[in-house]
Amino acid sequence: MTTTPTLPSSPDEPPVPREEGPAGKAGPSGLSSPSGPSEASDPFDQDTLPTPPGASRRLLGSLLRPHKARVALGALLLLSQQAAVQAVPLLVAYGIDRGVPALREDDNGPLIAVACAYLVCALAGGLLQFCFIQVAARVNQGVLLDLRSRIYRHAQALSLDFHDRYTSGRLISRATTDVQSLRELLDEGLQDLLMMTVSVVYISSLLFYLDVGLGTAALLSFVPLSLLVRDYRRRASERFSKRSTAMAKVIVKFSETIGGIRPVQAFRREKANDEAFAVLNHRHERLNGDGILELARFVTLSRLIVACATAAIVLWGAHRVTSGDLELGVLAAGALYVRRLYDPLDRFAMILNNYQSAAASLEKIAGLLCQRPDVPEPERPARLPELSGSTRGREVVFDNVRFAYRTGGEVLPRFSLRIPAGQTTALVGATGAGKSTLAKLLARFYDPTEGRVLLDGTDLRTLSLPELRRGVVMVTQEAFLFSGTIAENIALGRPEATREEIERAAMAIGAHPFIASLPDGYDTDVRKRGSRISAGQRQLVAFARVVLADPAVVILDEATSSLDIPGEKAVQHAMETVLRNRTALVIAHRLSTVEVADRVLVMESGRIVEDGTPAELIGGTGRFATLHQAWRESLV
Image 1 (cartoon, rainbow, N blue to C red):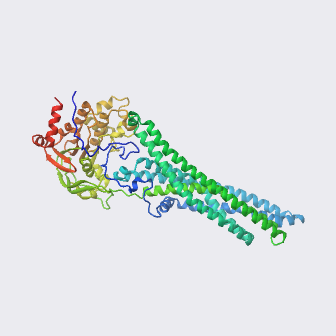
Image 2 (image 1 turned 180 degrees about the vertical axis):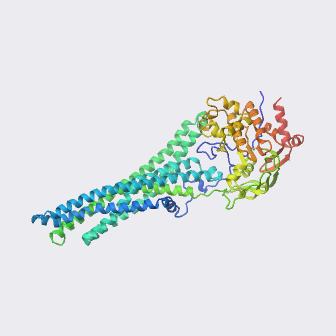
Image 3 (image 1 turned 90 degrees about the vertical axis):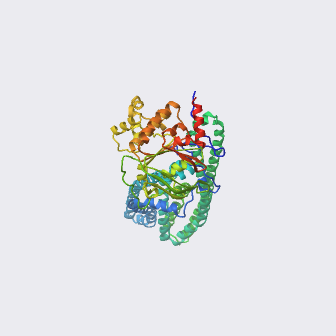
């Protein structure tokens, strides 16, 4: 049995995992960022990202702006509907004070008029409310649709540095749990809140119109209620923010466990995970219970205040009626208005509950959307020069480049490097030596801290990202396949490609025979992450993508390190096809991969310590020669 040796890992730098699943810090593409030093104050370690003052209001305003016409129509419908509804107690007052005395004189006209007006108000109120709900629902659904789309687009646009530090479980929580909180407020609470606000304005005005004393007494009763509401908002806001954070941690733990189900079962982590999940789940339950207790406290105290205020106003009004200072119909209408004023308070408590939850969620979403990519698009994008000559590659230059983490810790000390067009350059070295970081600078997943990376003399920072992605393609160790057919996965880099072009790309790298043998050929659904085909076959599909996309520069990040010997040989044959006449940077842990290279760079602690052709380095006495000798001996 023969094995292919890999370069030893550095004793003080453990290997960086290539994939951590949905909740891991490496995305499903399998790219891993070097792990720089972390700080306890790192905002990415918190569930709520730093949010500029007023960001939540600006976000809400931007979401509503496209619906201004419907919002205005909804406001008009709501005002009209409440005018119809709140006219009823006035009709009661008129009927008692004018209609009843007229009836004693055999005049039925006033009461008939009151009955007809009552019927008109009821019909108009119902019809206007139906129209308002229709308009409000369209606005609500449009806002939620826009918000989900923004989160999805923004998450894709953010740099790898963000995704390396902010778990995808939290992103999922923003797009699901927090959006759901907003949906509950918009669908179930906001309409009622608007109706209550308008009704309070109408009722207060009408009470003052009927009797200044009744209006003043009703408004004075709102003083203790407003103090109670302010205290509830303060206490509930803190609890809902903590509850949202606790729910996000539950989702992160759940998705992390499911994403890493194989090692969980292989190392029998089920019981330990159950215990850890139970702690997070119980914390969420406790915080949720605390929120319910706050709500119960508010409802109880508000009902007590309302009961006392209503009793006091009715007794005082009755005394004024007996003294002739107030008409009976006015008191009846006033009592109805006071009851309408206080009736929604229980419902208001639930709405306030939803509002506090939605406000906490909106702040978290606003914090996410305020994050800016570390790799921004240029204001005036440049274009790459046209390719000339027989080579399809481009010259790559690292000009006085240095790279360090934002939290400190230099990964690549200052260096310069030129890779001629069409040259295949292999990078070898221990884990943590800086190979992947150098490759990611070339792919512009990160920008250098200092210096420039040039492609045919053009600074990568001046290229639009679509232009750069057409010219530079990266193939990782874990060839990620999306759910869908093999043809759709091959066409990832060129969605407009024809079936004939897709098949020609697969034939070029030797993938056509295994694809043709599948039940549905190129239309075979590869299922989740390509689980229906082997690792070597997934890698061949990834190489077919590259051939179809036809980039000038190809980066292979340990493309054969996870394959067995037969799979490695098939992939190496495909590599030769992919790299022909292109500029290539090949990160190699297996020395057999280096055989396809024109040049080898040996890296150590972020520095290039050896540079030469494979033959030159093998004939020398350096580190690469020692590694190559060990590899040769392992084949005997």
